[in-house]
Structures are given as structure tokens and as C-alpha cells.
Amino acid sequence: MRNAARRNALLALVLLSLIWSYNWIVMKQVLRWSGPFDFAAWRYALGTVVLFVALRLRGVSLRPPPLLPVVLVGLAQTMAFQALVQLALVEGGAGKTALLAYTMPFWAVPAAWWLLREKPSRRQLASIAVALAGLCLVLEPWRGVGAPGSAMLAIGGGACWALGMVLSKRLFARGDVGLLSLTAWQMLAGTIGLMVIAACVDERPIEWNGAFVAALAYNAVLASGLAWLLWSYIVERLPTSLAGLSSLVVPLLGVLFAWALLGEVPSLAEASGIALIGVALVAVGMRGRRGASAAI
Image (cartoon, rainbow, N blue to C red; front, top):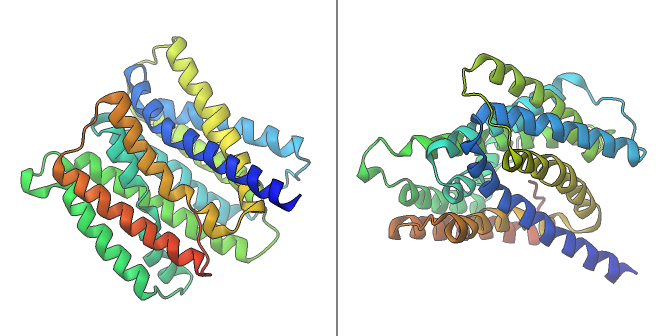
């Protein structure tokens, strides 16, 4: 029975990685029919509804966690992260944006040092150094200062995600907060922020068509609803270090999907930078397997 549960959790991890990595392609393509902030607001509004329905179906209490910490997590992890990466996708490639946004584990190290007093290990510091070298190759600053704007937005999104993750970890340490409950309530807070941004920013009208509705459905039902249910299932049944593998697989699959489906062929420097960042991410993952805690 235990082996069957572990096998099912591993299958859920594979499915989750495919859903989240392919969604970077969906988020890039949807910009043909919508402004970035309108889509982000619609996506998370529908995703929030799906999550609260899931809470009710699983019999989880709808009592909100502590309000201020949840709002802070939502503003960082949902509103700021999604607004920045969706804006980055306007000019940037889906694969590169996914990779740079998933540098989150590296920004989480100084954030955890600052907020949780978790001093980084030598391995973490070495991984950050390797990742920074990779980022330099991906950004290619020697080619001019005009292009990196999108990349910096994606990196900023990853930093905001890291802050939200560390704030979530601090909230979990207090106890009495479930993963799915916190996810739903912080998403509600972040969604309200995204709706305010969308209302204040002048964007072109949404072109409501089958493709746009399909993209919304993919994000609401799969990337937001089902994916977070899968994540809850994985966290409950797999070691944290093994569950954390999704943070390694998603951006790399995103690069491959963008290469195959969007023709985003990385340059030699970009490919070298991607490889270095991948090595650094694996090093962070190996640290988790040796007994340290990890999170996404």
C-alpha cells in the first residue's frame, strides 16, 4: 500500500510538472488576445473560485488564517509575482521568462536569512554564485541595455515569489494553517490586488474567442485548481526534498516547450547560462535530499 501511494504521488509530480511548465507557453500565447494584467486578473479570479470549491469539497474549514500575514503572502506570491512575469512575457520569450522566474530558490536564501534567521550554508552560497554567473550569460549585458528589461521583470517576479514563500514558511511555523487553506486565501488577496491593477492600467480590450477562453480554462482548472490540489497531495505523501524536484523540472521543461513549440532557440551564451542555472538548482535540490528542509 505504501509503495502504491508513493507511485501515485510520483505520477502526480510528473503531471504537475507538465501542467506548470506548459502553462508558460499558454501565458505567452494568450497575450495575442489580452493585455497582461487583464489576463492575470481573470486567471486568478477563476482559480480562486476553483480553490475555494476544492476546500469545500475536501471538507476543509473556510475560516481564514491570520489576515495580515495572508495578505502579505498574497501581495508578494500572487499579485507581484504574476504581474511581473506576465509583463515580462510581453517582450520576453516563454522559456527564458520561466527559467528566470524559477530562480526563486536563490532569492529565498537571503530572504530566509533576513526574516527567519536561517544562515545560508556554503553549498547555498556556492549555488547562488553559480546561478549569478548563469544569469549573466542569459542576460548578455555586453549586447546592450535595451533587451534585459523583460529578464529583470522575470527575476523580480522570482524574488517576490521567494519573499512570499518565506512569509508562508513563517506562518506555517506558527501552526494551525493548512497548505490548501493558505493557498486559497492568499490567492484571494493577490487576486484583489491584480484586479485593482487591471482596473487602473489602460490595456486593449480582451478579444473573447475560443482560444482565449481555453487559455483561461487551462489556467483556472489545471494550472491553478488541479495543480495546487496535486501539490497538496504530493506534499502529504512525498519527502519535501523529492517534492521540491518540481522546482527543477518546470523551468527546464518550459525552455524545451518554448524551443519546440515557439521556436525560441537559445543562443550559445543563453544555453550556457541555462546549463549553469540548472546545475545550481540541482545543487540546491541535493542539499534538500541530505536532510535539510526545502520549499517551493
